[in-house]
Image (cartoon, rainbow, N blue to C red; front, side):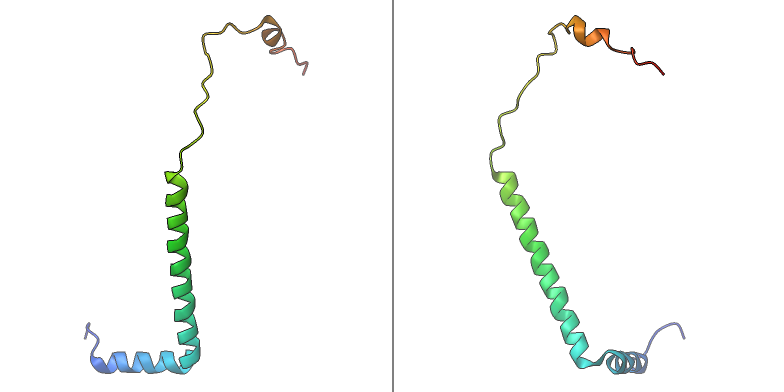
Length: 79
């Protein structure tokens, strides 16, 4: 009782064909194929971007002393 026989599958396929028709199913499969192609193309484009050398990394000197003007206005806002 738990398994589906060949007759169950034939009825399911017949209902799907009646509901959607042959043209709609083929259009749907074409749209799915175009989506897969677009996805693969996007993945290839991402790989090409990753292969390009990046800009040189800019570093910030953290040992520099902060200026007094920058520190004097911290917390000076009146509420």
